[in-house]
Structures are given as structure tokens and as C-alpha cells.
Image (cartoon, rainbow, N blue to C red):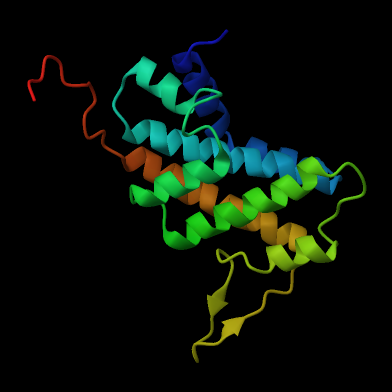
Length: 180
């Protein structure tokens, strides 16, 4: 079984290859595969920003991020990252929406598509791509739901990647023998 440090190193190498990931996603014709892979990529960025923020203690990281850890799910990571001020409320809300969409693809066996009404409806709630015009009215983008989903993830992943580079650990090492 790989150590937490080995897993972190593997994740970092994959996250640094944004172009490779983006190209891979665009070669996947199947909506299900693309949705699951894209959501996993954003989830890995959330894990990485949280790991960058916490103290450098392998046992702590394993308890937090391991398979039974309190930060083992995508949606939980989004809420915690928001609570720590690492992502915005809009990014947190989009992560929750992306997790819902991913789950729709992952947990239903047949014929899921970004063209399905329930998935289209949820995609239309993504905030990352919503922009207002000069009069304060929201402009609708003339792109499909799959593109909204993928572009939202791409934008958030790039923004989180930049934040990871700038995070300073509050406590690189846990305090030893601290009397309370």
C-alpha cells in the first residue's frame, strides 16, 4: 500500500500536467467517462490545496484523507476548503453541483448524457461561467452543458493550482511537547 507521501507525489505530478489532462478529457467521447474523470481531477486539486494548508504530519494526513478519513469525499473537501478560506463560496457551490452531476453519471447504469433534462438543469446552476453585462444582467453563454461543466472545472482547477503555489503552511511541523 502506498504511503500518504507517495500518493501526494503522484497526485502533484498529475496535477502539474493540466494540458495532458485537458487533452485526455477532450478525447473522451462518452459523457459519463468525461464527467467522472473531470470531477476526479477537480477533487484532486481540492485535496492538494488542503494538504498544502495543513501541517506536515503523515499520520494526520492519513487520518484526514485516507479512505475512511473525514476529508475523503469531494463535497466534504469543498466545504472544508471554503471554511478555511481556500476557495470562494461560488467555487464551493460549483463543487457541490459538480459532485451531484458526477454522482448522476456514476450511480446510474445506462444512457446518461449531458443532454438529459435533470443534468442540463443542474449544469445551468454552475456559477463559474456566469458573467454579467454592463447593465448587471446575466449573459447566457451559447455553449452546451458538457462544455459548461468542463470549462467550469478547468477554470476552477487553474485558479486552485495558482493558490496552491502561494499557500504558506501555517505550521510546517506540528509543535512538540507543547504544554496546554
